[in-house]
Amino acid sequence: MQPPSPEEPVTERHDPYSAVRCANYRWFAGGFLISSTGLQMLSMTVGWEIYERTNRPEHLGYVGLARALPVVALALPAGHLIDTFNRKYVLIVTQLAFALITLGLALASWQHAPLWIIYLLLTLSAAARVFNGPSRATLLPLIVPRKDFHNATTWNSGVFQCSAMGGPIIAGLMIAATGEAWPVYVATALACGAFAGAAMMIHPAPSRRLTDPWSWRSVTAGMSHLWREKTILGAITLDLFAVLLGGAIALLPVYAKDILHVGPQELGYLRSAPYVGAFLMAVWLAHRPAFRRAGPMLLASVAVFGLTMIVFGFSASYWLSMAALFIGGAADNVSVIIRHVLVQMRTPDQLRGRVSSVNSVFIESSNELGAFRAGQFAAWLGPVGAVVSGGVGTLLVVLGVAWLIPAIRRLRTLDETTPGEGAPTGAPGASPAPKPSA
Image 1 (cartoon, helix red, strand yellow):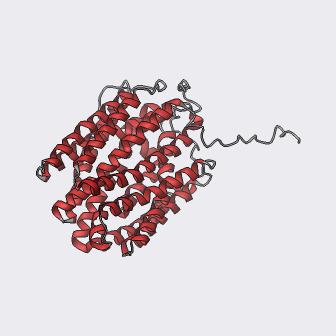
Image 2 (cartoon, one colour):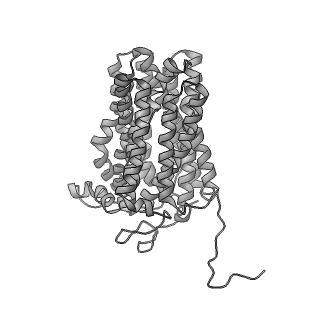
Image 3 (cartoon, one colour):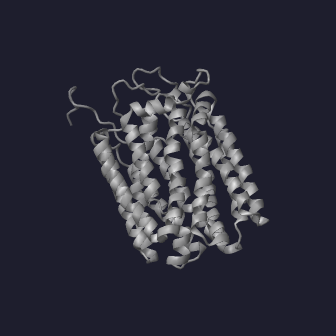
């Protein structure tokens, strides 16, 4: 066989398990899997308990509102703090905070405390999440080599989807066996404590700590970066409105009880269905090379998500509803992976905390505000009208973003550089970061 000529590029064989071979990442992923499973159990159980106690869908919307307001209020200062301090220890502290708060939820549920106490504890949990999500996201580029980051992001998405499909099933089985919510909350506290312990074993590469004094300009630097980097802005905007309009997860207790006429165990399967699809999509993508037409793929995946929400909204069949949620989750995970890679790879390390915090305002608050929207629309239009109108809105958002932000349509590979953009750690033009220990 003739060797390739100097003019021919040598294509490196794709290794689907390159990130998993790193010991840092295995500790990270193992702890994240356990903690995220517990938090998914918590989310499903809170919805079940509140709807069982009130039988009113708008109260499910109040859960979303309680979890969204701290994200909006604290995201910018949280990003500044994450860029200033050691991200590993921010992650550990927030996981311990989750553990304490969920123990409080267990006590409140056991004593059948007033609902306002549960809403207060959920608000405190959301305040901890403002720091947890960005610290976790910005730690990931520091624990794997740059060349393996796309692969790590894909597997990390799979880890989350695995926890999200297993958590509700476990919670449903526990509720069906005990008839109570508090044992689920205790299990969640133990799971968050386990991630705090695993995080102690991670040895990230040194990061560029923020040394600027606290100022409005420094706090809002992440927003300024997003405004300059139109591809990240477009991807986040697309996900923001798609989730805000198209999510149906918050209304699953209503669909399970009043439309599909199933119990808490089947509710757990319904809540897991989109994450089963997303997990299988993540595994498939991990075994494939990086995206070559990322922008069109992003737009198409969100459009498919919107269509599946319309099908789910009209469905009165348990199995058709499961199928719609499964396909919707698989499509949504394509956009999730593209967005995560864009945010981290096109952001300088010293800005990652602030950019990720702004991202959390767009994404995490949109999930919770989407739940609030769904609850209010269900009270006005009924659950079917709430879900179907959201699906239609998602399709309109795809068309609007494709037209208003042409950089998304033109986006090809996710590691393309943008003129004038600050280079991320390890990128050309940046000081090389030490390779994380394996």
